[in-house]
Length: 113
Image 1 (cartoon, rainbow, N blue to C red):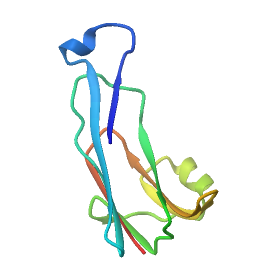
Image 2: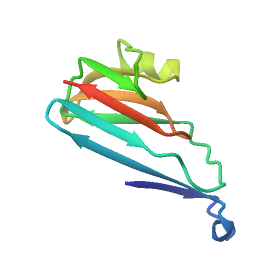
Image 3: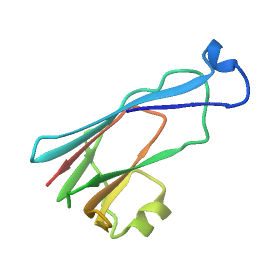
Image 4: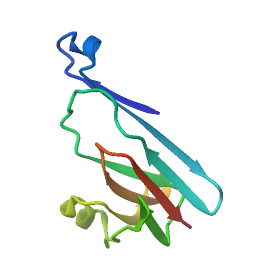
């Protein structure tokens, strides 16, 4: 998936005033991986964080860019913190692990089942 954004008003994107970031995910059966590449372009969107929802997994541990992610008791606590971290829960699809990461940098998530 490629996230793309620009000002939506002008043609400045033709001169590089856009924001583009590649997002990838994979699951090897034991660990779910999610990566965000370094963004391209000169446009700075208001986007601050990604709330990554990993469906079908209740993680036992999560690393964010190689470091142990801070675990929060619930989604409200994670949202209030506004900093990288993770929590687990359920939604209409079943078990889910939710990870909050900064949007404007390259990040890697590894969620272990």
